[in-house]
Length: 54
Image (tube, rainbow, N blue to C red; front, side, top):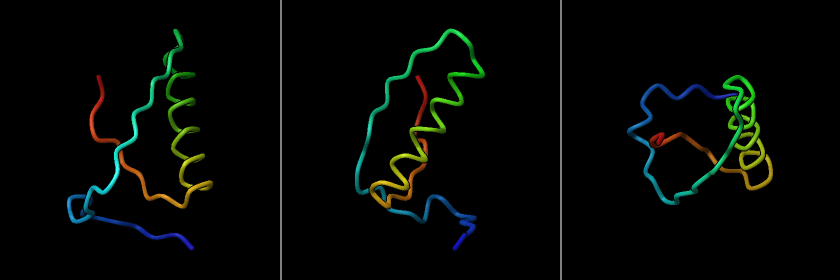
């Protein structure tokens, strides 16, 4: 089942996860980031959204 959420601010932040990824190639860094989001979504049934980037 797929769902589209148009108002991310309506989702209460209940938990924070910090990811530290390192890759010199920007495209691979993005790939690694998306892979982590998918892993947590599938393994822990979490609805995730990036909060900030440093």
